[in-house]
Image (cartoon, rainbow, N blue to C red; front, side):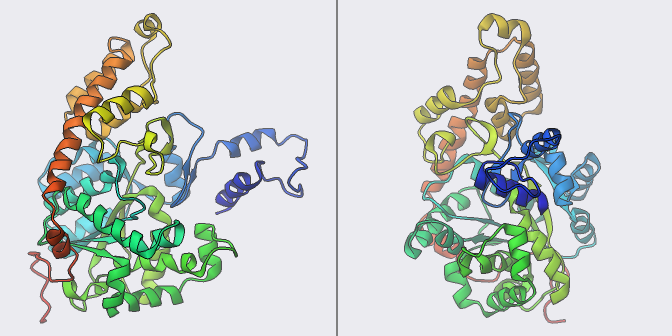
Length: 436
């Protein structure tokens, strides 16, 4: 919390925080080493991701700072044994790298006890980019291998509060984004997608949980967790309780009736963890199980891994609406290269895969592990040039986006309405027995 406040201070005044030194009067002395260390700290919250390193966020440090657990080889092997399926490439490659209580979820699954999945999307624009797909691609895999129900929260209320949008615009974006989410292939019989603006008004169970959470979190706590100030609207201050509520099964009485004891597993990017640290703190005090989490790394902007891809900057993102030509142009023109200044230098010294955005993107989307490793070796040795690496990425992205666009065209308004209608979902857990 103190590190976060220091980073917020530096962002506001342009200087590192020093005790007893007002802004504009930086103290001279022997603290330069400490200041440099603070300046290099990564900044991660639900709205901002920044680092000074071309390699991106130091996720090992983030695990320590957030107090989560690393997804190690042992846990990946256990998931493989439990599901009988080859681990998803996001697990094999450390893209989902951190967790909270995943072993509890596997214990429940192995003992035929129920759990459900919960993830979400903040609909800030009509078009989503490929980075937005990461949690949904992985959540679909989890739904398939564990065969469990899933709820997807569209936080249109959040975007209305934070962005310059009308309520109608925010809800419209939620519906449009839902089409892209559905196009990922979710099972309509096991998936409920809901808009906060729509669902909370029709679900007393959901709103009751929001109020319970609100009662158990103080203003000082949300200021400390989220950095809210006295100038923020009361809507922003109360919103975290709304994002927390889907973590509890009785928020969805149509799916789980009044069962409040079914644990939730939340796949999300690590920047959303502050919401669920708060949720896990509140849960036992209101008699509910703590949600478990799986955290992903950030999908880097085309310009480099110092920040995540942004929907507000068209040149930082590959959008799901981009044509094959636009994809090619964006990758060739904007994708940050780990190559050398000249072909001769590159052949001699090789490229740096740790900072090359095209290689980073291939780790997300190229399924073949052997081919990815060969590309890494060839680029690092200098046998593969930057242009050839970019060409490989373009050949992966173009069909992936085209196939997504084709699936999205098949998603009608009627299909969206069915996904977003509160209803009973299918599941085959033996202990989902509600009349006992």
